[in-house]
Structures are given as structure tokens and as C-alpha cells.
Length: 140
Image (cartoon, rainbow, N blue to C red; front, side, top):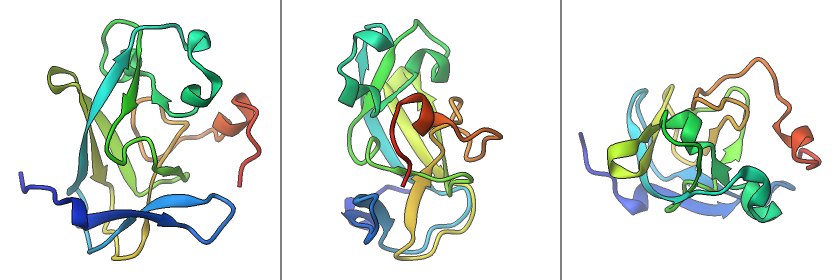
């Protein structure tokens, strides 16, 4: 696998009400890993997490097929905005306590990198788009 360089992606303002997002600083090929993020495992029930943290965590128990828990991704992992369909999918690497973000199609330089918040298994596509409603957040 090719090394990932921090300069290949950057956080900047989207120019929309979404605020900041993560952007490609070069072209990426379908199937290419965009980022590998270590995660912090939170061994608490979802409703015991602070409300702001609830909007940033991944259901690690579901994603990694392990003990019920949640994970806060480091790096840019918890900063990717939502899209349906998204241009990235993500997968848990439990033995490394990490999440990999992988391009599902060709991504152009300066394109915003997105994940699908509704696809609990890390898919880029979901039939429902209710994550914002479930969290009482007005979608942008």
C-alpha cells in the first residue's frame, strides 16, 4: 500500500453553511486509501457521551464487529462532511484501532471528501438519509 502524506488532503472552509470540510490536494484513484486514522475507543453507552461528541463518533461495535463501543477518529477522520452518495467509504481495522477511508470513485484535486453518515457499516451509499433528523440537527 502506498504511504499517505498529510499534504494530500487539507481542511478548509467549504464556502457553504457546512463550514469546514476535508479536500483533496491531488487526484485520487478509485480504491485508493485517502487516510488511515487511529481511533480512541469510548467504552460508554451512546447516550452517556456528551451531545457534541455523539455527532463525531463512529459505532465501533458495529463497524469492527466487537464489544459495543464508540470510536472518535483522529486525524481528519471525524471532520469529513456527509453526502449520499459519498465519495469515500470507511472500514474498521480493529487490530490497529484505526479506520481507513477509501475512494469509491475517481476524486479530483480540490474536490471535497465525504462519507455517508447513515451507512453504519461504512458504505458510501444508503437508502435512508435520516442521520441529521435523528440527531436533531438541521441539515445544510
